[in-house]
Image 1 (cartoon, rainbow, N blue to C red):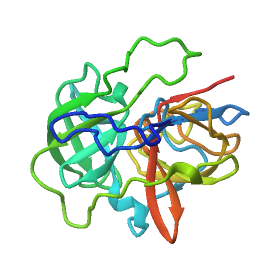
Image 2: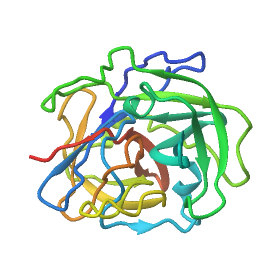
Image 3: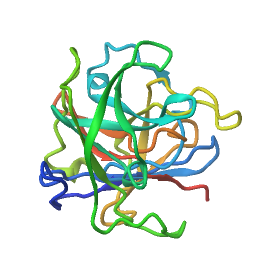
Image 4: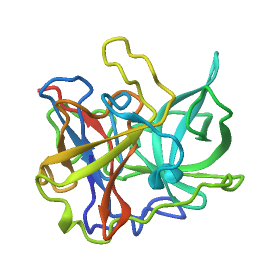
Length: 246
């Protein structure tokens, strides 16, 4: 995951100012591969070894999907988090070079998803889509503004005000619409979640690594949130960025 700590970066007119998030590095295979997160960014598929969201979870009201127009209609391909009534934070690679994007509200594309057109996007000024696999701090974070308002039942989540809690061993919650089988690459389009521990809180200055040996994120979970419970309340602290298959 990407984790922008206390940094404040302006992004969009609404901006990334005030967004202090980390990128999560996460793996897609059920091996010893750990995951990296960083300030709202996620490269991978769906939640492996997790649970389907039922809608009653406190955090599910803040998680959305990114959908793009294809020859087969609108298809979910990434995940995002509501941080205001019209702004979603996600991975930069989920926005780079992609047109016809909508924000999709709903637990599954098998149901009645409500779409809101994205009207503006911005990615971190230091993000590059062409980074080597071994790169750290790739600034894989971006924001998307949409029109049409929030559907009933949805609400933005607060950003973690102090990332001192993000230490090795801390349990964090990941959520996403990605695949739930790395082998068959099936199950994309359904919101799922799981809990994993941080194993390297200082993977980079803006990234954190999580242990996903038995459960974790995969393709389609990119841009999905990293939540942490503090004082009885869930806060978003990062976004899924990419997998580490070492």
